[in-house]
Length: 156
Ligand code: ADP
View 1 (cartoon, protein in one colour):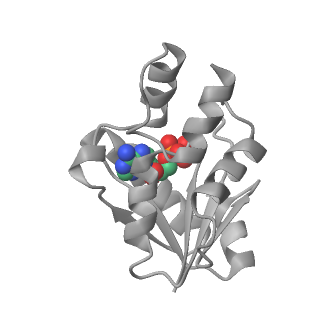
View 2 (view 1 turned 90 degrees about the horizontal axis):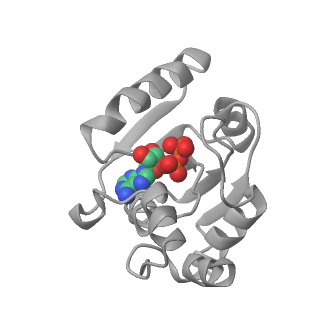
View 3 (view 1 turned 135 degrees about the vertical axis):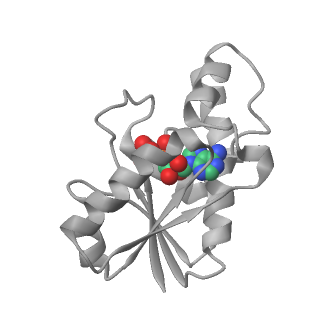
């Protein structure tokens, strides 16, 4: 099956990577679809975020990393994908994720959302936490993949 893992990924963390690896257990092809979230102010451009994720999965031909604009369901129909992968960490994720799942279903009834839970070491990891630690010169080497770490080294 073909899945799409959408997100802002600003930046992509080991928590996101954990979800991707779990999704690959049942997806033959997984699109990682990078978008701008209008509720968030982004540190990295969409192009930079796509590039870091591509480097992270270099050589894995099951994974396709792209950016997209507009409605997720339209992007999915264009890719002939019917499953949205989203990660759930805590109850605090639930309300927003639930709302998005119903919104997408109302827009396109053929599309299903699959929620996945990361390894427990990533339950408290978010892109916001990574940005905050990095901005204050803390160690993020155990929180992000190597290409993201290298990128942060260049900017701070
Ligand atoms: P968005 O702005 O679309 O919420 P994010 O990049 O913040 O994009 O998150 C993308 C998806 O990954 C969301 O479903 C989010 O809940 C999930 N996610 C983020 N961090 C983690 C993590 N540490 N473990 C598991 N899932 C995560």
